[in-house]
Each structure stands twice: as C-alpha cells, then as structure tokens.
Length: 82
Image (tube, rainbow, N blue to C red; front, side, top):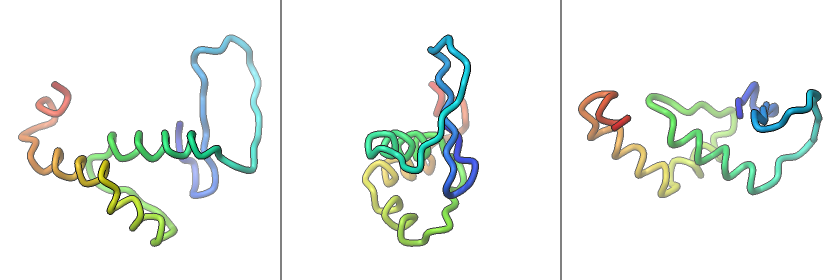
C-alpha cells in the first residue's frame, strides 16, 4: 500500500497473476486499520496528514506510543531491524 495523496491509496497485490486495476470510492475499515498499523510501524521520522484531528487520533493510539518509545530507545537502525 502506498498513500499517493490524502484521498488516494494505491494497493498492489503481488500474489495475483492477472493484470488490471480497480477503483473504489471508499476504504474498508479493516484495510484502513492495516494501513494505519503499517504506517506507524514503518515510520522513523514523521507522519504527515492534512487532517489534524485524524493525526491526533493516531498520536494517542497505543501502537503509535509503542513505536515512539521504540524509536527513542533504539541505538541505531540495525538494532531495530534485529
């Protein structure tokens, strides 16, 4: 998944053989939760949003707090990967 803009999410399925693309005007709650978790767990510096309220919701999320603590306490990039 890649956020192309605040309103556009690209998802590529590497496990599918067929070519093609689809378009939806909504994101399922489960998919949005997966995107949130992946974004939080893979960030090292900033998460940028155009919606301050949504950013605040993410900031107080327990997963986000765990990630902040992990990044604060890591000595270097390799220790995080291990």
